[in-house]
Image 1 (tube, rainbow, N blue to C red):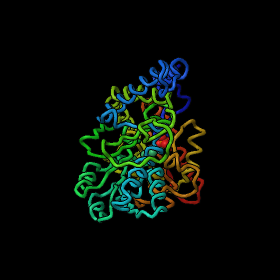
Image 2 (cartoon, rainbow, N blue to C red; image 1 turned 30 degrees about the vertical axis):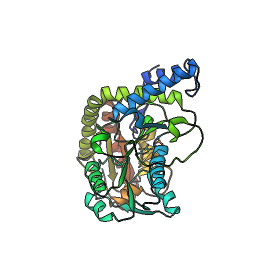
Image 3 (spheres, rainbow, N blue to C red; image 1 turned 120 degrees about the horizontal axis):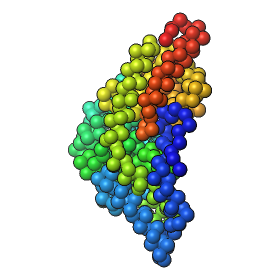
Image 4 (tube, rainbow, N blue to C red; image 1 turned 180 degrees about the vertical axis):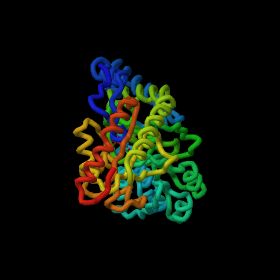
Length: 391
Ligand SMILES: *Cc1c(COP(=O)(O)O)cnc(C)c1O
């Protein structure tokens, strides 16, 4: 089996195709090595070996110790475990949590749960480039503060946050720090020891492995109260029989990521620059969303003024191009992107925005095709609207 791309897929931030080597590993663990890792017999032992191999591979990929990696059902669950698990454990110490206004909905959701439980939440603003200013974190800290959760890179605009600086400030005040690194992991070198974060979230399906599996890094000694009770799996941080095929695939994908990341990132950045520069040249009244420099290589989020973003998406879809308006998790929502509003776009501008996210299998032919189709689509939509803008 090969990874098959039927269309021009530019939505890698929503999910990635599974690599053939990863799929082979998943299949092996489903069909041949199907044991329950909690069983004492040899089938169970074999399953444990697969699980622990992945733990090694994932821990190496972020420079953690293997016993600091906990398998979960994905990024959403890891975010909830980190934010709720740490906050609940620290409840008697303080009830103030600091996050940003551009977090993934999983982190915002976890913070909302805490708010309903009586915690106070401060949501730091983002600059027009999508950056959370370290100065704003400094100002937000008060004596009840216990935990900061700010993402490493944003899933709509790709902006990379100054996490090192933010962590330093938090640590000066003895606050715990969680970062959602789901989008950063495919592109950036992550070293949890250097970073000095206490908790970090990653997800398998953003690195060419199956959906439904992820990991939470929890530094040794981090206060934590589990959200579910049950078996002893994952040392009670996350009970429940493990998603073994997913875990095996995750390990393989993490090892491949370590092998290919630098080379892939370079190639993807070249293609992204070509797409960005050429679109800016060919189409008028386009705004770049996010930081021009501090941005993940695969991300290009653009506002095509006076174009209905949804109509543009449908046009592109009919031309076999898959991309998205904002994040997949917010798709279908009639509201303009919360992230784009937070960085100062008007609701109309936000609704005229498209996210292209490139990845491992993006080719220069794909980019050429988009450069041919997109300017025409924009022109057509602008001509059809009562406004007198042309591409
Ligand atoms: C995709 C994503 C998630 C959610 O991960 P799932 O594995 O899909 O639950 C969380 N945070 C960010 C930044 C993401 O991009």
